[in-house]
Length: 264
Figure 1 (tube, rainbow, N blue to C red):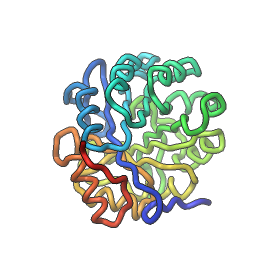
Figure 2 (figure 1 turned 120 degrees about the horizontal axis):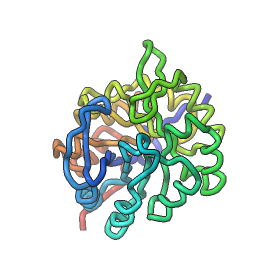
Figure 3 (figure 1 turned 60 degrees about the horizontal axis):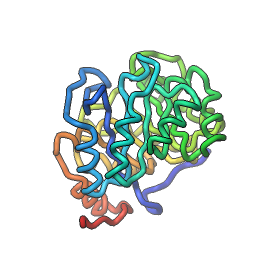
Figure 4 (figure 1 turned 135 degrees about the vertical axis):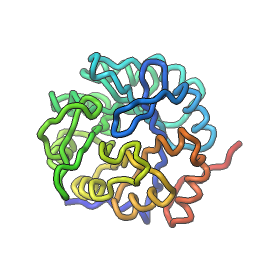
């Protein structure tokens, strides 16, 4: 068992998470009750200019329709946004992954189809490299120390144990894990630290905690206690409760290593 310990060595990555429905950036609570926030690429550009390390685009309704609709959004974004982009939602084949990467994404995140057809993990990793293959997990707590994997944007139970699934997926070639707590997502009540610790302790690949950031200390808590190497932030940024710079400075003051950034 390999414990990820990022609090004292490599840089913690600050990642903006953009959930997209059609042409709109949206935000919900527990992945439900979605509200329109604005234009995803306007927000992406703002976050890039203010020093975000990476951006995740998730097509929130792609699994319902069986395909990802973000290629054009990504193509436009890459004209002016120059940080690594991860794109997820509705990716069901090598061709889907290739189309997203060709549009300008650096990585693809796969949840639903990876559960249905785990071989897609190995296929993407072998074709494009494991660093391109991000396993997206939507996790819901079922007991004090166990979580179940959900798919279809938190709508469908799978019966899979989160820790067992993440270990299998990494063996198959997943090079990174995007770990979303359904219980915490959109609540502003902090990350699920127990979940983050359980997953980051089980695998040696980078783990991104997503869901629940409501105050500056939530970030340092999930890194220092949960062992993650990156944090995905949505609500806290979208509703301008803090800037990227303020989050970075707070992380630095908490003793975390973060990338230095000076606005040009």
